Image (cartoon, rainbow, N blue to C red; front, side, top):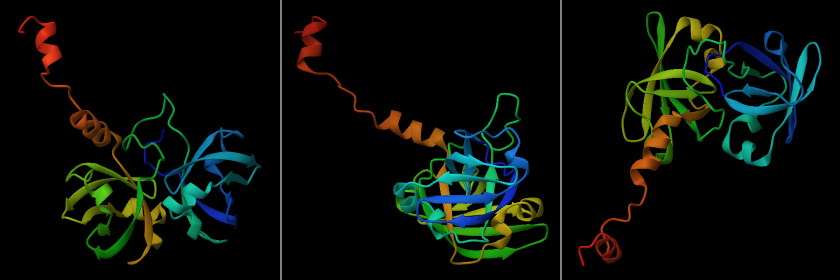
Length: 207
C-alpha cells in the first residue's frame, strides 16, 4: 500500500522486456530484496539492490496494462516506498495496481499550477468523481472536473518540480489507478440480492 506522494525521481539504467534497473538514493533507505517499490505507480518487487540502484522484474501482464513497457535507458520514473504505520498519509490509499493507462490530451499552464486533461477508457471513467482521488503515474491528485471520457486535474508547481509530470507532453501515456473505495462501493451496490422467493415465504410462515 502506498500514499501517492512521490519520494524521489529515479533514472532508468537498464530496461528490458522483463526487468528494470533504476538509479536512486532516498528510496533505497530501508528497502530490502523482496520488498515492494512503486515505480510510476506500479507496485513491484525488488529483486536486486546495491548502494545506488535497485532492480525489479516486470511481468507481461504489467507491461500490457502500464506504461513501463515504454521505458528506455535514461527515462525518469516516480518512486515511492510502501506506506508504514508511522508515515503520514498525505495523499490517499494507493494499491499500486494499475487499472488502465490514459492519454494526456491537453496541458494548460496557469499561475502557480498546471491543468492536465486526460482521456481514459470507460471502465475507469466510472470511478472518476469530481473532487475525488486518482493516482497518475503514482501521484495522488484531486479530480477537478470530468466529462464522458476525459477528466482534469490541477497540479501545483511543487508537484511538477518533484515528479515526472514536469516532463510530460500531450500524447504521452500515463498509468491510472482509481480510488479503491469507489470499487468497493460499486461491488457492494451491484451484489445480487435473493429478494423474496417462494422458499423465503414458506420459511417465514407466509405460505
